Image 1 (tube, rainbow, N blue to C red):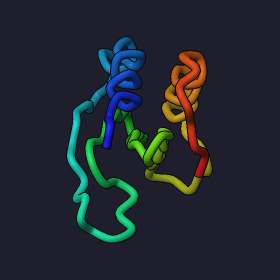
Image 2: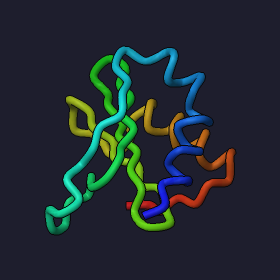
Image 3: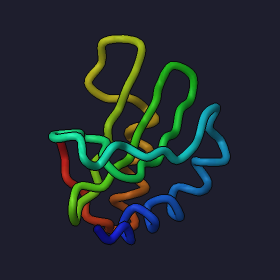
Image 4: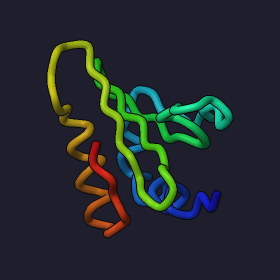
Length: 93
């Protein structure tokens, strides 16, 4: 798979990357059937919010996690805005 879209996403997220409490890249198991985190991933966290950006073929997927029951996080909104502003293809969940 060509990871260019995810590489470009990491570049446009750089300012946000510098402000996070946790940041990193991780690799999801590719051979695991149905793994939504397969391949390379970008992880950002602030406080009790965590966002993981993965690539699904030719689209980015943004996975948001929070310690409370909520459908969207403020960090996730920032990631969405930056990716949309860069006009990278985005697949909503």
